[in-house]
Length: 96
Image (tube, rainbow, N blue to C red; front, top):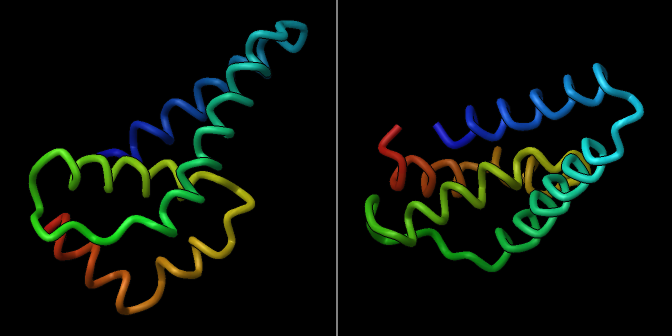
């Protein structure tokens, strides 16, 4: 669900940028969102997998990883997400 929301936000902002090329606020908004994704990508390096699948930390963990996945220059996190250890931790948290 988190990935879907982030996908929707980014695609909406990108379509606004295409419709209104002279609107500087759209570029600023997209820049801020991608900056947040970049900070989330860095934060994922230090976040241990939560021990429970519910709760505030588990929710924060899912959102931070959803944002980090949309940071285009985060090749390390994308490669890390494909490892068996990370996939098992994500499966334990999300139940999927």
